[in-house]
Length: 356
Ligand SMILES: Cc1cc2nc3c(=O)[nH]c(=O)nc-3n(C[C@H](O)[C@H](O)[C@H](O)COP(=O)(O)O)c2cc1C
Image (cartoon, rainbow, N blue to C red; front, side, top):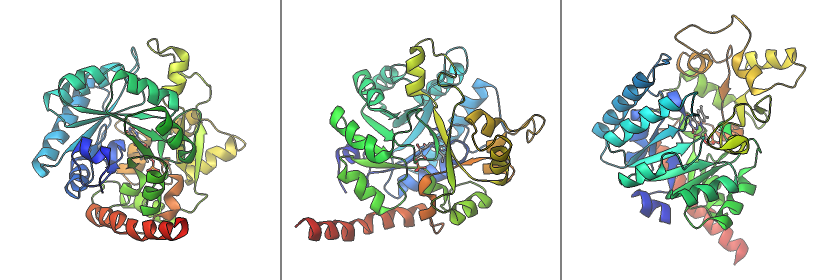
């Protein structure tokens, strides 16, 4: 399979494994890259405890980058989450320095403006792919000089934009608006999703939740079982309580709303059901993620770690795709990518018989 994205990144198949923080470590990223896709190392990956030290965060990342390089010669990516000045910018600044030091081949930059780091990466010869949730964000990222954009719809696991655009609506509008390759994310878990994305004009896919249910993913088995048990109605998207939760002095309020965390999609767990019942069925992201006072898992942990790493899924919150109901097994990354590619031909054939 060949698109401008495969040429740009030097990969065989237009499949990028999305960043999923703690559970996208060097082993997973290397397995995806070896299989012909692009693996991505996520923030804090490979570790089991929370740190509030920016330097330690960066050094943990360095360890993962070196491990990935030792496991594969194929290109791989690192996710850099752009911090807000005065809040968490020191984390992203340090991580970017580490990424530049280590010569990472591809930077996947998310939850912030492309203006912050693109130039530095480009000067170092790093390919830059920006994660966007609106057409405007994609256009601004192109102006800032990124090589490609990922546009990710609200179907996806993790944080997505405040406007909650769906992948089906967002991808073709972004394709029409920018000239650089567009990668489709959100709700894509199989070859049907891949082919649909290509039909919308995307040149690759960005898949998170599907790679969570792989053998190499370090997520606890309870998390993988929760995905296997999921149906079409197993997730809910919750928004920040207020439309402008934190000011971003560089981007202005509107910039924050468009470019940072607007909503998060969570799978129903016992904990989430309890909070929903307490809050009368309408909850904000703050309600869902903060939990009740005095109910934090431990000082070294947080709800994400407790669920994804320790496997205490039902007492916490986990984020996952609206398409989780399509996940029925836990293959290796190699098996998954082979399947994505092999099942594309019969789909193309079927479409040809319809279209003529
Ligand atoms: C468990 C989990 C953790 C995530 N963590 C991150 C992250 O650290 N950085 C980021 O930019 N996106 C993160 N995301 C979003 C994904 O990178 C991606 O946009 C999303 O998974 C795509 O949709 P899909 O899950 O339907 O494939 C996360 C998603 C999940 C499911």
